[in-house]
Length: 427
Ligand code: ACO
Image (tube, rainbow, N blue to C red; front, side, top):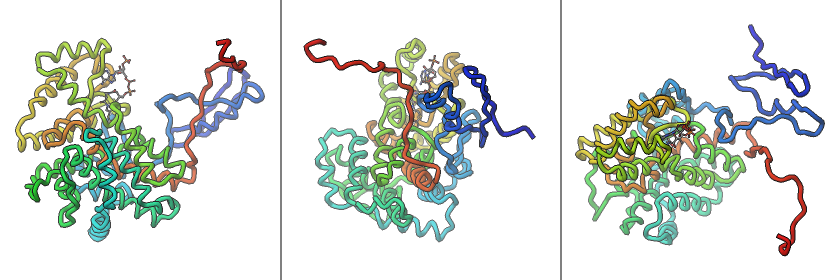
């Protein structure tokens, strides 16, 4: 058996080092022993944007980007999306195993018991401007939960962590619905705990005058979309949750950092950007010129490309199926025609093929959300609702990992050497 080690020769000194390999990684700290001269601190690895750095050992989600594989706790996403409810998926991510009927019933009951928010919360939301971006409101509101539940700071206590987990999963739909209603100047609708998790959320969002006709096909479609977003290992927002959580702040604050990361157009904001892009294209006949401008470096084809998937995003495949079911109910979305043609052309174009740029989960999700009646700037809130169980599962895994410490990357300093301060009159 060959040794599971890496031999490194430092050509500056001629010295040789042997560092262990475990799970296909070497430890960056093992490089510190490699030093050219006394006091240089040893070698570091330089990896802006973490392109090739494993920041943790995780048992939650497995992705093989080249093969287009995504699994939650070992279960293929296709099976989870087909068979499970959203709360069942959340349980799986958080607990590591599928729940028994009794465990699921308890989990659902716990969540149902915590769907209400303190009435002061509505005053807090009222303080936002009428046109406040829903993601800005959501991140502020979830951060504010920490002030309503100061006991959440007891992050070392598993019972307290469970309670905050339940609170977050239970209250996020209520807050997300309040945010939706605030944007439209509609009175808030409180949770109706006779309804299921998704039904309750949709009712709080769309009920008018005590009436809302639920459409089971659209509700299941929304549930599938949330399941598809429930975790995606160490993406930008999850890394933000882990990194902020590593300071041992409460989970509401850590999750609001995740929401902030998700707000950005390169991450969760991409489905919003897809619709803006489709609006700008305006007509199928404008697609070739648009593709040429992207290839010339003027902007990106939003909803295409992924840091990890270098083949078709498995979630995008599932979403396309959901889109068909939704559009059968709601009628065709005029932008869908542009999207389908855009995808067809891009998938045949050498520029996109050679860079392995395929549609990602956001390419179709925005079109579906729009058909369901959600405004464009609200799409990322739905992404956040879906991603929440993943954020909490990853946060708890980080806390329980004895190897994790406060997150604190190093840097390569490239600035001035020491120089004397110049007084104002000499500058
Ligand atoms: N349109 C056109 N060209 C693209 C696109 C795109 N969407 N994405 C990447 N490229 C090109 C880059 O210009 C670069 O080309 P070059 O080698 O000639 O310079 C090459 O492909 C590699 O791109 P990177 O930016 O290095 O890839 P990275 O892994 O850093 O980016 C990202 C991934 C941010 C998702 C990128 O593909 C992108 O901006 N896509 C559009 C936004 C989007 O859809 N985001 C959603 C991501 S999925 C999610 O968050 C759920």
